Structures are given as structure tokens and as C-alpha cells.
Amino acid sequence: MMVKLCRYGNREFYSLSDLRCGLQYSTSSATDRLGKTHFMVDYLVNSLRFSREAAVSASTKVTHLKSTHNPDLVLNFFKQSGLDKTHVRNIISLIPRLLSSNVDKTLKPKMRVLQDLGLSGSDLVEVITSNPSFFKRGLDTHIVPSIDFLKTIVRSDENVVKAIKKKTWLLSSNNTKRMQPNVVILQKCGISKEKIEKLVLRTPRRLLQNPKWLEDIVLRVENQLGIPRNSAMFSYGIDVLASMSKATLEFKYEIFKSFGWSESDIITMARNLPFCLSLSEVKIRNGLTFFMKELGYEPGYLASHPKLLMHSLEKRVLPRNAVLKVLKEKNLIRTNPSLCYIVCLPESKFMEEFVLQYKDVTPDVYEAYINVKR
Image (cartoon, rainbow, N blue to C red):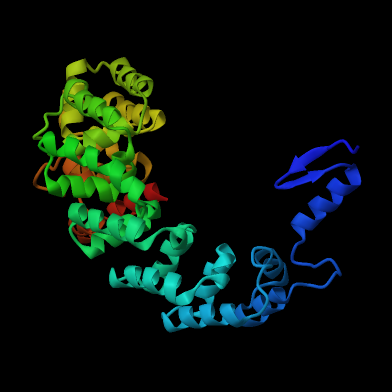
């Protein structure tokens, strides 16, 4: 009686030599027992310009094919769908089993659903390759219900495309069932359809969490951040608290408090711009050090003008502050714009108002801006 050594996959092995042969077979199934290369290797090299190595790897998934008849139908279908050879190669390299798919029953109807949304070319390929199980999912049980549900939230085909490009797993009925109760929770909080739409487009995974988890987040946004449900910042508050643990949030609070901020100051900032709490420890400390210790700003002012903390200190705040300093020293500006106004201006507007018009009068302005930005 032979004693079983181990089990690998669906096979049982009774000796080291058997196991060794089994492993070699599993990793080189592109070659048959007589040492002949599977015909699909040459097919992929010649039809889609696969590298030899890539063709060998892909062909191991379709060794059951006995001819190129079905692969020819598949490649021709993708070509007729408007995809070029590079697109098709990208799809087949990731999902080689599609070469054995039924074109009329599987590929055409599912591709048509995506194309009807407006997807084509590289966007279409991106959705397919980001979701290798897409063609395995039922058209009427998964794909269509998911798209129909997304349309009720984001309200346009264009936005459905944006959502599924960000998270292709949204095309699953299971996810749809998980999202529905969370959408109801947000609606009961008084969050408008527009804000729910933005939340789905920003971070759709927020609506896939356990409803009890979301209910807890909602209460914390109100009680811990002090953001009322009717505030435009409420949905952003959900994003912030959903992205960090309670311990991390408490740690962020302690950083602000170490610079003399009160709980009230922090809540004021959160009400105005909750994303300030998502900043890294380094960014928070560097920003508070500059604005408070170098410029002398008080916590109350920064809490009321939180955008100052959001912008890059090195790439935006310091260069623009240098320009403002030069202009004031030379009495070149009649008004007294605040640093907050200066920092929040779009780059083109800032260049137009505070740099280019003074370039000839005082080259120092232009040089200060360019040098500090380097």
C-alpha cells in the first residue's frame, strides 16, 4: 500500500519524484507530454505580437482549445468593436480565457452594455482589464441591475462611467444590495441627491460598508466634528472620519492642541474644511509652525481660514509669500491683500496680478517667485 506524500490542487502525490513532475507539469502546461509547444503560443505571437514568454504564459490558460477557430472569432469581434491590436493584446494577456468564450452569447451582449454607456477604445479596455471577472458575471443578474442602480444615484451615463472606471467592482449585484441601505441612511440624514452622487463618484467604497458602521460615522460627524447635517461640509466630514481610525483622529487633535488650539478652534476648522484633519502629521506641524510661529497667526484666524493649511507650503505658500513681501517692501501695491487671498488665487490669476505686471518695474518680484519655487 502506497502512503500519500501530499496533495497539490486536485492531484495526490506518493513520492518526491511524482511531486516534482506534477509541479513541472503545472508550470509548463503550454508544452505537451511529448515536448511540443502548444499551438496557441505561435498563434498569440503571430496574431497579437505577444512576446514568446508572454504567449507561453497566456496559453497555459487555454490548453483545452483544439483549434484557432474560436480565438479567430473572438479577435475578429474585438476588432469589429473598434479595438486596435494593442487594446486586444492587453485584454487577452490579462484574460486569456476569453479566447474560448462564446462571442454571441457572452462577449457581444456584455460589450454592448458598456458601449451603450459611451465607453470605447482605451476606456473600454481599462474597465474590462480592471475587472477580469466582468465576463463571468450574469448580464441580467449582475451587470444590468448594477448599472441601473448606479444611474438612480449618479443620474447620467457619463457619471456611471466615471464611477465604474474608478471602481469596476461596482458592476456587481451584491455590491448594489450593500449600497442601497447606506444610501437610505444618507437620505434620512438630509443629504441631498447631489451630495450622495458626489460621494459615490469620490469614494464609492464608503457606501459598501456595514450600515451600522456608516450610522456611527454620521453621529461622529455631528458630535465629534460639530458639523450639522444641513452643512455643505457634512458629506466631506463622512469622508474624513471614514478614512481614519478614532485613535488617528485623536492624535491629530493633540497635534493642534500642542500649538495652543482649543477644542472649539478645531471644531471651527472642521466645520469650515474637515479635510484639514486628513493632512499628514508632518504637513500639519510644518504649516502651524510657519503660520503661527513665523507669521504670528492666531489659532482662531487659521481655524476660520483653513485653506491656508491645505496648500503646499513649499510649492505655493512660501513662493507667494515671498512675492507679497517684496511688493509691500517696495510699496508697489496700494491695497493690502491678505496672504490667504494670495495663496488661494489660481496660478494664472496670481501671475497676472502680482508677478508679470511688476516684472519690468522690479525684477526682484519675478526672481523671488521663480527662485523660491525651484
